[in-house]
Picture (cartoon, rainbow, N blue to C red):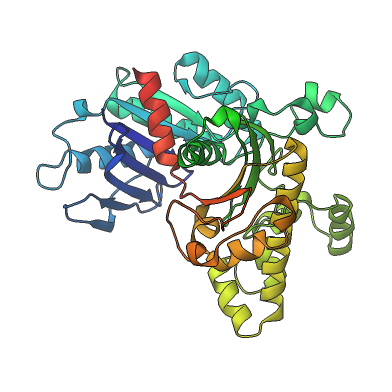
Length: 398
């Protein structure tokens, strides 16, 4: 079975063709600058790489056609015809409270996705455009599935998702904690259960998806019970450029003092804050670590603030679940920074967390890095959101 996974943005489209049964990636790539001048990238094992070549893509439909043309190309393709694509899985950012799992797309689902646009005005319209483009190019007979960033967190109890605002803002305006990165947290929690050799239903896990965008999730019995991102992905940890949690009164103070409107303030919070704002150096943790080694105190402070908040949330979620069996590190920083993993777990020995420095000296590898005697396991698990989307899609397509 072959599944085409699509992650559509407003002017870009990432794609992978996978076999979920063998977990083999047959081909992958990126369509960029859709609606501008169009750049196309295609990579397949044993085939010639196409790297950012000019392809006319006035709309997402032309981008999808470029993808399909590459996949079936007689010399460079990996399938003989479009008929070998059994289904398409789409990453969709926001499903509100309507969707608690992945769903096969039909007219009812499309109408519900349109209703979710006010909750994710930058992302959902692009996701919808990708779905419509696939249908236009591939036809209605190819099953399409929506896999939601928010769905995994729909198991959170009201005590975790309710904000202390007038209750009608929830009932009438849908203001609540939704959480994101759900596909990643779901995937690594399933891999953790396999790695530990225990059923997910018996485990209390804390999943740390740490990168330019970061979130932490408490997973009890295979279900999300709390997560750090909130109504939007702006909440929780300080991230690459996002501020994370802060006193809302700061907004009024800064807007009045600097004569900013709400759009200017949100631009600061989303694009100029986080570790970039603290350090003044970069939003990339690799750059920060290099600068800190050269004595840049603000770069070191940015790292320290990030690591402190990660450690604090790990402790909070262990308390919320009444214990923890394993801590998972994933995504760019979580998978690839041994030094930061050591520092983020330092001081958690009272909980039974103890990391072996030798085992921990690895990048992008699925491994238990716990030291002897640790009663809480520390796991490094590379995330694979595309595979998770493909697995969900294959199940529903059957």
